[in-house]
Image (cartoon, rainbow, N blue to C red; front, top):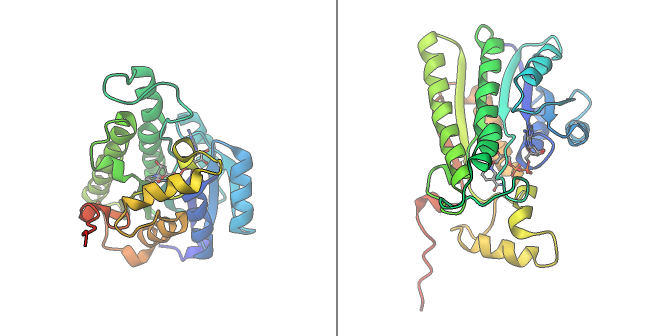
Length: 263
Ligand SMILES: NC(=O)c1ccc[n+]([C@@H]2O[C@H](COP(=O)([O-])OP(=O)(O)OC[C@H]3O[C@@H](n4cnc5c(N)ncnc54)[C@H](O)[C@@H]3O)[C@@H](O)[C@H]2O)c1
């Protein structure tokens, strides 16, 4: 595989939160970063923060023709890394509830279109570019995809599907002899703008965030940079023997509920 500086890293959802932190982190590793987002202005801002070699492009991950345009517009370097970070909870952006009694097909399809179809399209297009020269795909799943979430059926199902897609892509590449790895990260509660619909933006935000943090064994929400660090490792050759797996970043939630003995 080509050395870092001669490889491209394409990040979706790079305009905010985990995607943005990942674009900045991968640029620090010397990769030539293509920061993409539905919102071109936000992608531009992330590319500016990532450094002079980073390139911003508009990409709606739901749109197959847009993937083709973006792949055709890439600088003439091998695509070594794809990070599928674009995602939506649906709360605040897509109308309709997400509990099993009220979830409409429209809402379900709108969430799946970004979180599942976007990842499937990304993997398919990346494979075309990577199957000869090699690469690493990292999909951003969620703790929500490993448990039941009664008020977020669409989001949880979409993230469970991301885990499944990641494993299938990994096995497909291994079976086909492609030098391509595919893994997922499984973040818990990460303090990004995605939480605005739940925490609000007003003066009560900190108090509400503290309530979320109280359910985390480590007692705090994670940061986008902490997730980006794990993504950068999975993307790098340091993880050369790692494929088809998940890296959990949840402050200990997977290990069990917080135990606070009363004295
Ligand atoms: N924040 C958390 O607690 C958390 C936990 C687990 C998993 N995740 C996942 O991490 C990923 C990043 O989330 P975040 O917290 O950084 O959220 P965020 O809202 O800060 O960023 C998401 C970005 O995705 C972009 N986006 C939305 N729809 C798009 C589309 N159709 N095409 C391209 N870009 C699109 C948005 O414009 C935004 O810039 C998501 O997949 C999310 O589900 C987040």
